[in-house]
Image: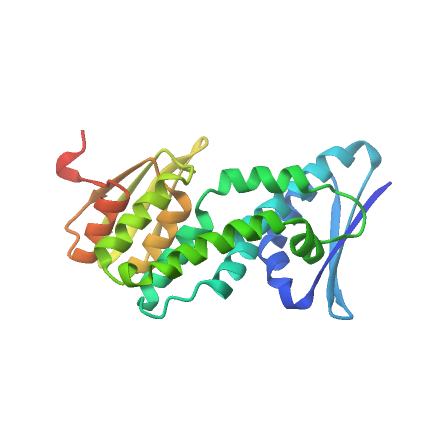
Length: 246
């Protein structure tokens, strides 16, 4: 029997909670079981499986923990150091998400190079001590944005920066179609062997989703009356309208 334990302080428990359901599914699919409980200010996680399944379980844990650092941990860290009071709440949130997604492939390589799945892994301790290289990169990015805050208060300049950031984000999907229907946005795409469609209810949610997905091709259908959103979609993502799609 193989057993693996990891923990994180309650202050950063959201990092684990954000990946918990995905991790549980992956571990179950690999033939293992997982249990988590909070005790003395820490969330403690135990994973167990038969020895022949150790490699698959370790790979699942490593994948999910790496993603945790690239998303939840990076978001919390960046939001703590990125001070841009001149930006609107919407613009700040969009920029923050773009900075979190920025250069994620290179950062994944750094984490995977350093992360070893050993018993009693302290997720917060690994972040604080072993990922100093990443935090230094994030500090530099935040400092650059803060030093140019006056320029970023302009939508035009901010959108230019967002376009640059998107150019360094690997796409998660080749093509995405967005339809404006009844005041909502219907997003349609194809991933792996299946198609998906769901609704997005406002411009901010749509922008945040697109930043994360970073579609290689974005197509718009319907009359987009939100000029600010339309400019961002065509300027940042090079979106094509239905008249220009071949």
